[in-house]
Structure formats: C-alpha cells, structure tokens
Image (cartoon, rainbow over all chains, first blue to last red; front, top):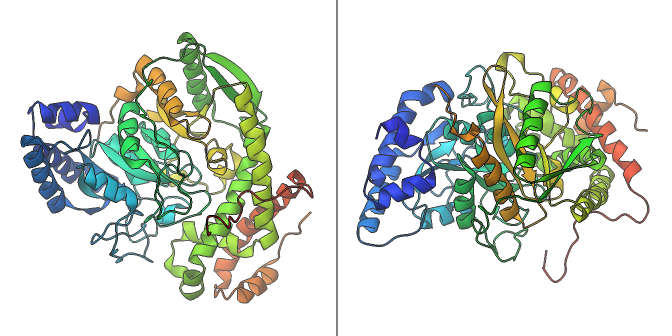
Length: 466
Length: 63
C-alpha cells in the first residue's frame, strides 16, 4: 500500500490492517511522520512534534498486539492534540507567547484516556491563540493554513486539528469548542468533528476559554471514526466540575439504522438571512444536502430561527466575560504579550459589567428553553457548518463574522451535541459542512444522521492536493 | 439603550481595571468594546423579573 493511501485510512480500516498484520503500528506512525516532514512546512499544523514518543508508543503497541493484549480500536492509531490539552512533560503553548515554554506536570483526563487506549501521540497542534479570535498572525508560531488552498484559513480555533486530518497527518485529533471551534475547522477542512453534550467529555487539564461554554471533543475523517474516539473520551470525571454523571451508550449501536421518518428541523427563517446572510454557494450545498436527507426518508420541517439567531449575543457576552476573568491577571501585567486578534476580542470582557454577564446568563436560560422546545416536533436540527467558505488570509475582516449568522454557537449556549459532516465544495474547491444537532446526551442520533448522510455521498472521500 | 464610550471614557475604565494599554491600542479596542456593550444591552429585552440565570450554585455539589 502506498504511504499516501496508508495515511488516509480510517481508524476502523487501520485497526483491521494492524490486526491482520498488513502493516505495523510503527509503519503507521512512520508514514504519518514522513508526511508531516514532507508537507507541514507549508501548513504549520503542528507546533510540537513528539516523533520519538510516537515511535516508542508504536513499538509498544506492536508488542502488545502481537502478544494478544488488545486495548481496543484505537490501539496503535496515531493521533494529535490541540495545543491546549495539558500533556505531562510536553510543551503546551495554547499557540501563545504567554505559555510558549510551559511544560505541564499533569495530563488532561482525555489525554490519559487516549493513552490508555493505546494511541500513538504524534504531537501538539496549532490553534487560534487561547482558542479565541482569529488566526494568530503575530503569535510566536505561524498561523495554520488550509490544505485545500494555502491562501485560505482552515477555520478555528482547532485549526491544526482540522488541517492535519485533511492533510493525512493523523487519524484522529482532539479539538475544543466554545463557540464552534471543532465544527468550523471541520467544515472548512472537509473533515468530521463532533462537539458532544456539555459535560459528556472531561475538560480537566484543558486550558479554559469560557468555563460554562467549553466543550472537548474529537475530530476525524469519518463519522464512524468520531464515534470510536468519543467512545473512549466520554464519561464522568470527578476532576471536572461540569462533568455529567450520565451513562455512556455504545455510540455505534444503531448508527447504521438509517433515518427513515426522522424529522429534521431547519431554522432557516429569521436566521439564515441575518445581516449579510449566508453565502449563496454555502446555502446551495446545504440545500442539496437536505435533498439527500429527504431521499433517505427524512422529513424536512421548517422551524423558527429567531432564538438561534439571538443566541450568538448571549454566547459572545458570556464568553468574553469568562475569558477575560480567567486571563485578567496576565492582561494587567503583560497585555501586549497576547497576540492582537485574541487581545482585542478578549479585552472586550474587561468593559462589560457584572449585570451584563448575568443578563446574558438569564437570556441563555430563555433562549435555551425556546430552542429545546423544538424537539417536541423534530428529532434533530440541520444547519450549515459555517455561513461562508473559509476566507483568504489576505482578505480577512475581523468584523465580518458578526455580520453573518453564527451556525455553531447556539449549541454551545445550550450544550447540545452537534456534528459537522462534509457536504460539498464552494468556488475555489473549498469545503462546506452540514451540522446535525440532537437533544442533550443523544450523540448517537448525531452519529446516525451523520453516518446516513455521509454514506449516501462522496464528499468525505475527497482529498486535498498538498 | 446603552451609550457608546468615548476614547477618554475607555481610557478611564481601563485604568480602573488596572490595565495599562497605550492610546493606539485603546483606539483599536474601542469599536469592539462598544459593539460588545450594545450587544449585551440588547439581551435585556429577552428577560423579565422572573428570569433567573442559567446555572446555579448547588450546596449538595459543593461548588
């Protein structure tokens, strides 16, 4: 098998190949490391490579698998982590000068879970600085580029996770999502990402952006791979105050049962046309995806988009206040150590009042009730992954995102599980995604709809020419 | 409706918050701060006297 084919296997396919001895875990890791070495100078998806550790973990995986010690579907699989997951003894920077040399003395809970599952850690991935603002053009590490077109952003804040997966550098990655930071890069890079229910995956050991909106979750190249990763990541963690003590189902059970008669709510009215509205090509890809869902037996139902539209205001107010509170002492001492993009967005929180913050939390309660009430008449929501194709670096307008609908952050506000799946391309061969959103703790429904759509289309099989 | 801040008012608020920001940085911050304040203010229309914030302290949870 050619190295490039090896690098684009799914986790499921790689697992079969390892167990049938078509290749070893060391060969998988080597293939990824060689590909990173050949191409990442253009993409900048990795901040820190852990090649020696990866090869040591791969050798250990080969040894264990050869002696019948099988840790499950992630055993021997190369993965990478957004650089805000604490990794004991490995630099964790948040893509910032503030933490440029921080070496944690502990691991995030999710990092421990992935290691115990036998994964092979390739390294730490670039991101938007402290998971906020835009691409970090004045940070100590270069901004991550989109593998589909290097002149364009990959989306963020889990930029490196999206780019590395699309480029075939790893088989799975962790992102984090406070307003869309898993789903936006998934959509912009043509891969799959799920933001699970708030509390489903531990946040312990992940540098906070906004405590009440932060979610951790997996990104991969297929819906099934995301389900495999989430199976390992999910579960109660006493170290995380927001962790939910809720049973974790088998996320693959029922995944292939189809979506006949599933009611899909589309909150188009009063939302998709907000301010500048959705980009026409993006909307066209979304509408074609809805037709595919209908052809699979789903019913498309119009629902009111007004509370979804208003959710952005509450999300942004809460986010900036909580983010500034976390970083306040550093801003008071060394404000200019933060890059300009994150600094200007986060400092907004210094000038909002306690009443502003609590009013946003009160509005959150109202809007979440209105949004969740729709589940009386529909089973899932379908919305675009992003309002427009990824911008060119040379043409970025930091204000434009506030002039378009935000299709991601209502589901952070409500903590609802949401998956982004590739649904086509816009002009310039730039990917678009569609999100499926389910009631709390029903990630399995996200996987079922996502899998049915994915398998009915070819979008997930497209690869960028890097 | 909330009034936009002037640059002088922003400078004063920054000083009270123990933020040492140069004037050119404050000028770049000002539009975003005013947008954020207007946005936060609009949320007041969504709540009434009975609306409590999402999320509550729980004595049983100890946090």
